[in-house]
Structure formats: structure tokens, C-alpha cells
Amino acid sequence: MLKLNGISVKYGSFTAIQRVNIDVTQGDIVVLLGSNGAGKSTTFRTISGLNKPFEGDIEFEGKSIKGRSPDKIVQSGVVQCPEGRKLFSEMSVQENLRMGAYVHRAKKDQIKQSLEHVYELFPILKEKRNDPAGSLSGGQQQMVAIGRALMAKPKVMLLDEPSVGLAPLIVEQMFEVIQQINKEGTTILLAEQNANAALKIATKGYVFENGSIVVEGSADELFSNEEVRKAYIGA
View 1 (cartoon, rainbow, N blue to C red):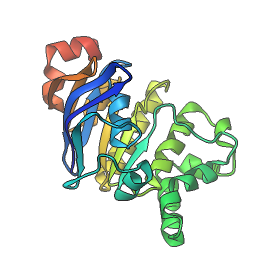
View 2 (view 1 turned 180 degrees about the vertical axis):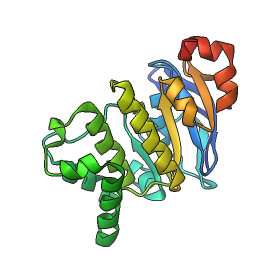
View 3 (view 1 turned 45 degrees about the vertical axis):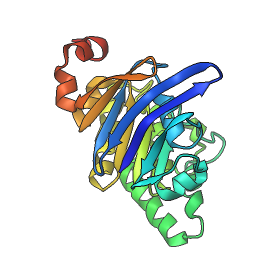
View 4 (view 1 turned 30 degrees about the vertical axis):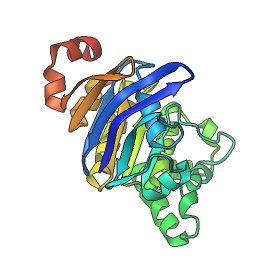
């Protein structure tokens, strides 16, 4: 469904990611593991059209999307939920969510349905829909960020570090919702440092180090890989 074939990206003379190959099958939850600065966010920004690769290709549903503008990539069904949430803090929760549906702004009924769906997934957001997004707790802000991405009706959702800075209980709830979104038909590509939580819900994963993929395999294979456990799971 989504394929990266030998993708490399440079920032000036620095090579941020090198010959990255990733294959995401429809219906999967695929996790990218790695420490901060390993290349996960650069990979996401490149899929989303925000970075231009200097070699390789990106295919979505059998067609190359390399060189397409970010808004066209969103329209085709690849939607990113960025690291750090990037909410409009002065705007209300509901206004933030509606921003996610901007590419479908002509479809009023669809937007209404999408909004109801987000409120079903995150009932607390319905309660707080008129509050400024900046007044919410970290966990609730992450819910708004995921909800906003869902409003764009993604076929593939790119979730960049959704658990950063959240309490363990909130992380657990967040991952349950990610599983629910996946069961409802959205394919998930997840970048995470919390390997333990991510591998519990993932189908397969890739481990990044210094801009390259060093290990790949099913979630079970990565979970039982001694080096991966030592580096990311602390066991």
C-alpha cells in the first residue's frame, strides 16, 4: 500500500536518512523504532512531501507520490499526526479538529460525521469542545492531534511519537485508541521510542540507527531480538 524504495534525504551536506526501504501493507500497524535523531521524523516528513528525497521513490497504492505537494498527498489519503502535536492553542478543540478536514471542506455532511466519530473515540473532547486547545492536559492535546488527523479521512495515518511526555496510563489508553482506529480500517505507520507499548500492537517494525534501518521483522521477532530488547525495551 505504502512503499519506500531506497529513499535518501540530505540537509545540506548531512545525509539524514540513507537508502531506506519500508513496506506497509493495508491493514497493518507498522512501527519505526529508534532513538531521537535516528531518522524517523525525517522519514515521515519525506512521505508527507515536506522533505524532498535526493534518491529513491515513494509509492502509495501503486503510484509514485514523490514530488507531489503535501496537500495533494493528504488528499490521496496519507495523513501525518506530527510530533509535538502542533495544535492552534488559542483556538477551541472543535476548531482545531475542523482544521483537519480542510481538504474536504466542501463535504459538510462528511465533516459532521467525522466530528461525531472523533467524539465517540475521545468522549472527553466532546465535553471540552469549546475550550482553547492550549488549556488541555498533554494527553488530551494528543487526543486532539490524533482526532484532527482522523478528520482528513486517512487511508494511512503517520503517527509521530504519540506517547512522548505522557503518563503510562494515558499511553496505554492512547495505544488502545490507535488499535481501534486500525480495526476500523486505517493503516498505521507509527514512529515510537516506547518500543514496549508499540510492539504490543504492531504487526511488524523497523529499527533506525543513524539514518539507516539496521533491523526489521515481525513484532514478535523484534521483541525477542536480544539487541533490540537491550537498546529499546530495557530487558
